[in-house]
Structure formats: structure tokens, C-alpha cells
Image (cartoon, rainbow, N blue to C red; front, side, top):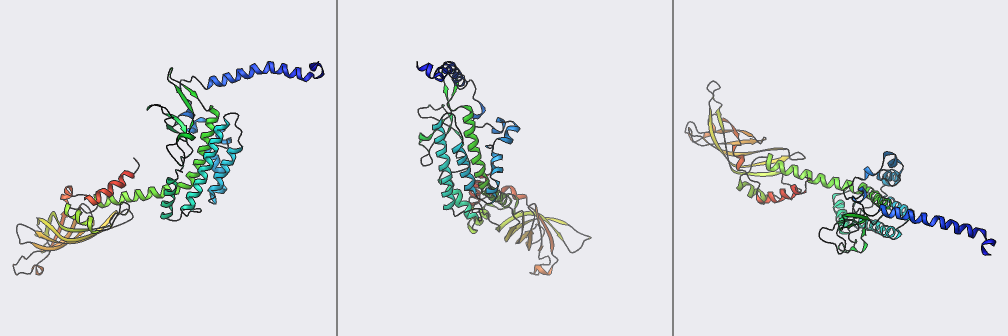
Length: 402
């Protein structure tokens, strides 16, 4: 009786009879696609290049693509409105349709909002409203971001061990720990699990949703990277410059004997990122040759040991690639009495100078012709970096990219 008065009810029932098995079939197909996998899709692999997930055409039209994100928010980035760009990305995800796993979307949305809030707090704490102006601002911002666990990788998945997992049970997860407690796994989103009985994988987040999460994270990372890149570039340039200066000072500068390195290490004020640009020369022996200037017709070069009694060398150039200095030196030859003179330094391989010997034994060497002196730094192999210098130099070297 009811069916005759309401024919659409009968039609609806017939449709249900026909469609329900189809829905179950589709559900079983989707479920089958997410279970029993012998190999993980690239979206679930930590080092997968996300650019290989799409064709060039898909990249050009997908609004989530990081390059497209930077294009769409170019105006905000140009005026340093990073918070505007980040909040725009968060709002886009907020209204994006998700057919299933709404709880995962809500957890990701919560973390995205928190990362943006913490970024704002860190920037305010460092006193940075827009562009970084000083090294102090840069250092303060990096410290604030690190303290709050906010960075360009904040939303990206990482390999971690789920609760109850063994030492080798690492999986790709989102949010291995909370912002407040890195060891708290309560916000963790597991993306798959391993069936050890047959060495297969079950996807806990469907592939299209996994791709969406990773692209949303990459979009936020692209904006944060746009902000942090000048910071990172400046930091790397500081490290690179310090490394070059230390290398030129210790390896390519004027050599230092152990006692000289010890004295110079205590004499000058320096740090790992601000190497000394000067050095004292003290009792520094070298081997060279002297040639008399009295007669060019009878020019004879004699071997000589030169002991630089006291001197000074200064370094200049952005990387300390040049140096210049001089010293007072005693000249020791086996055919005449010791002489006195001075030596100029401008090259790491040799130095040149003049010296006077008392050739006529009248007690005054300066009334005799001077000798031209050239030395070769054959003792460079016994030079030392000095403990004070080496610790700073090693610290800088450790920060250089391998």
C-alpha cells in the first residue's frame, strides 16, 4: 500500500539493491589497493623526490605545487608578509575537501596552525618584523626558531618508531613528537604499517591524501625557506669566510714555529669566526742566500742561516689572502762574523731583505756594503697550528658542508 502511494520509495529501494553491492565492491577495491603491497609508493618513502610524482602538465595546474605556491603568494612575499602567506596556505587546507580520514586532516590542520603561530612568536621574540637587517637579528631568530622546534622541515614526515615498535620498526610518520615535547607521540600520524608475516605494507593514509599532506607541507616549507634562506646564506657565508681566513692564516700565511704559535695564541683576541689577522715573529730561523752588493763583477752568493729576532706580519684581504710584514734578523755565515739586517715578508715561499756584516773588523757593520738576502721557508714542515688556533679552526671545519 505504501509502495503504491509513494512509487519513488520502491525505486529508491531498487537503486539501493543495485548500488550497495557496487559501493562495497569499490570499497573493497580501494582497500585492496592499500593493503598487501610489496613495495611502498614513492609518497611513503622519506627521500622520494616529490617532483617525480607529477607530470609537467599536472605541476603547472596543481595549486599545491611549491613553485605555484610561491607564484600565487608572490605579492605577500615581496612585501615580506610571510605570515599572510602562511595563514593563506592554512586556510586553503582548512576548506579543502577530504573524502575520508577527517580526523587526520584535523590533526594536520592543528599542527599547521601551531607551526604558524610559533613562527610568529619566534619572529616577534627576535625583533624581526620583515627583512633581517643585522647579524644579531639573524642569530636571535635562529635561536628562537630552534627553541620552538619551528623550521622549514616542521610539517614534513620523518622516519620514527611507533609506540611499541622494535628497534628496526621505523616508519614514515608525521609529527613524531609535539612542539612542546619532542618525545610525546600523541600527535603522530602513522602513514603505513608493516605486516611482518609476509613482508607487505598496509597504507594507513590513502595515497591521494598522503600526497596532499606532503604537498601542503612542501608549500609551507617553500614559504619558510623563502624567509630563512637569507639567514642560511648569511650563516654559510660566515662559516665559509672564517674557514678561508683560518686556512690562509695557518696554511698559506707566514709560517709559525711552536713557540710562536703559542705566543700568538695568547697575544691576540680571536674566535672561530673571527681569526687573528696578525702575528708576531720571534726567534724564527730560516735558510737562504746572501749576495754582496760591492761588485757585480764578482757577485758571489753564500749560504746563510737567518734568525729573525723580532718581527710582525699583518694579513689583509677579505679572506686574508695577502700578508705583509718584516722583522729584524741576525745573519749567520761561516766566512764572516754574524750580521744584522731586516727581512720583508709578502710571500709564503720566500722572503727578501738586506744585512750588514763587519767586514773590516772596525766594530761598525753599517760602514760596509750591505748584502742582499733571500730566504726560502724550508722549515715550513715543522710549523704548528697551535692548540688555541687548532680548536677554533677544527670547529669551523666541522661546520663546513661535506
